[in-house]
Each structure stands twice: as structure tokens, then as C-alpha cells.
Length: 181
Ligand SMILES: Nc1ncnc2c1ncn2[C@@H]1O[C@H](COP(=O)(O)OP(=O)(O)OP(=O)(O)O)[C@@H](O)[C@H]1O
Ligand SMILES: [Mg+2]
Image (cartoon, rainbow, N blue to C red; front, side):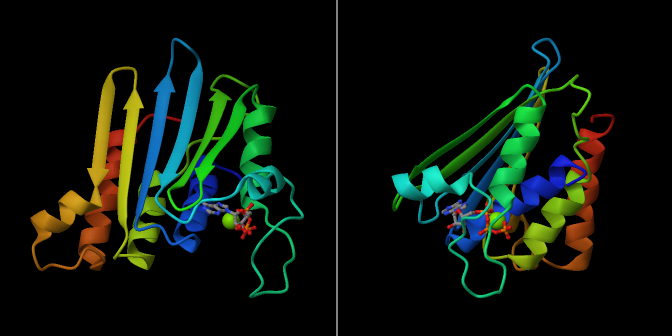
């Protein structure tokens, strides 16, 4: 995958497949520590110990609806982080939810760009308007937050997945994150 937004999409889709009603995505960048952390937290069904252990193995998936016999979402993100002198962590509890965290050394030669986070959020929201998404972004003291739960209240009866609303969300995110990898 050529950028982090695609990994983010894949991991968030896992949360949705796991029945999450809220998915929280956190991007934290520290220039001084030379680190970028991508964290995705959900309130889905969670994973047991054995699944967590197997999940980093590209030949493991619980998906049966299609011919593909292996899952790649998690192994690919874990590999991307580890290649960049980083770490990958899964913390999950059955019935409670899952936290996936990938940490990268920002200046690493293999570091992927952040990509189009605005479009990725718009894709998630448009495909799953009933789910609440939180995007929080922090970069050396600058912070940005978009919570669809709050946004839905402000929108009143206007659907969040209206093309004009999605465009606003996308542009708002991308202008806040501008200039970053
Ligand atoms: N957030 C989550 N909550 C509960 N189970 C999860 C979560 N994320 C992953 N899993 C479990 O881990 C398995 C592997 O996930 P992974 O993303 O690597 O592959 P996949 O989703 O099965 O396939 P792909 O991502 O390639 O379409 C999933 O099939 C699912 O059983
Ligand atoms: Mg997946």
C-alpha cells in the first residue's frame, strides 16, 4: 500500500466488520521524537488471545464469504511499521473492542506519506453513515478533531452522507492536515 491512509481504511473496515458502532482514529506526530503513531480504537466484538496471536500471520482470516483465504490488512500495517524502525501493537478484549497501534520513525527512508486522509474519512462515512467516527490529529501542539457524532447533531436532519457534506468534511480535514507527510 502506497500510503498510510490506505492502511487506515483497511484497519477501520476491520472494525466495522467486527460490528463496531464507534471507530476512533488517532494520528499523532512528534517532530522532536521523530515519531508518527496511527491508532485505531473500536467498540466491536474484540478478539480472543488466539486470534490476536494468529492475526499477524497473513494466512489467517475469519472471512469465509469469499475465495480469498488470507487476511492482509493487519500484517501489511505491522510490516510497514516494523520496516520504519517502529512497532505494532494489538490490544483487544472480547465483547469490549480493539485498539490497533502502529508507530513509525518519521524520517525513515521507507516512511510512507500520510496520503489523502480527508478522502479516506469521506469514504468511511459515506459507506457507513450510521457509524460514529472520530478523527483526531496532533502535530507538535497543533490539534484537529472531527467527531461525526457531534457533527450529526449540528447537521440536524441533514444526512451526513450527502455529497456536499462529505466534500466539506474532506476539505476541512485536508486543509487542517496540509503540509504534512
Ligand atoms: N478490529 C477488529 N475486531 C475484531 N476482529 C478483528 C479486528 N481486526 C481484525 N480482526 C480479525 O483479524 C482477522 C485478520 O484481519 P486482516 O485485516 O489482517 O485480514 P482480513 O480483514 O480478514 O482480510 P483483508 O484485510 O485482507 O481484507 C480478521 O479476519 C478478523 O477475524
Ligand atoms: Mg482487513
